[in-house]
Image (cartoon, rainbow, N blue to C red; front, side, top):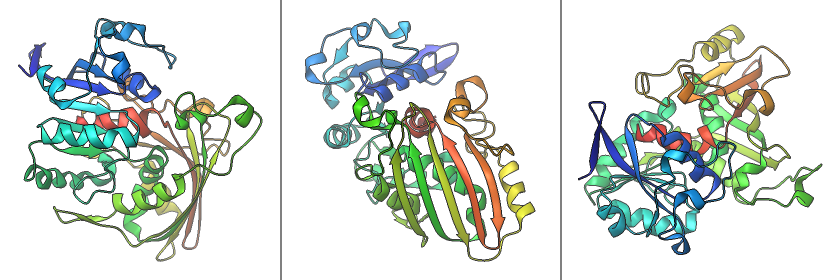
Length: 352
């Protein structure tokens, strides 16, 4: 009932919640011909129920995959998803909408992989970035003692790029992190900001963003005892700015270590960053999750947002540049694709 046999592999029947939005449409693209997951249901607002997916307005360059044009929107309830045989849901919902339906799904035995922020700070829910904190998956066993399904979230799109770039030096003993992010308009969703507000302009405040970066970062690098997470004792300061680029969040990072750093050693840590065993061979995992460039003009959203190999992992790597080490201070810039690595692709990798 729950799976489909394809090329001798059993695919997991899955659904996308919020399939009409930008992130929802990226989920559709990443699930097309996926070797593990078979998309069998899509959901959005009640007004969409019964309508075919092909009628949805494309909000991304590649649009709605033709493979899914035949799908019709289901009611966004756990009961309807169970009738469709869904075992996994990928959530691209706003946090306020996600809270109720994601909880219902988990209580009904449907596993949730969410891009929404509704449960990120719950004690028993991991904010998972597999290359950074895979042991936090132990929390799903705690969840399964309470109900028959679990929730795994990915981080806020800004936090994701920051956390991945901090991973190579996290074991050196971080004392303080100060960042300034320059975030693409797509991070605000569709329709997002008015052109009159953002064209030829920058907006030095993104509601709630700075607090998300601070709280999520210390949780991601915190210690998991199997039932909850003790946040790491770093000082984290964030300033988040909206800029008139379409895709890609660029972050200027200033890290203060507990002790003086060695420039050659720290550079080697970034250059040698490879996929950990936890992600090796997974379809959406980049072979090199961090790409260090020596070009002082990089990374740039226009040139680097599709970093990541093999092909299915395009947009899943972060690019680090302008690396400088002076005493205990490490400075660099990092760029991540906020719609792939920071959103849909992050959740798909978590499910893999």
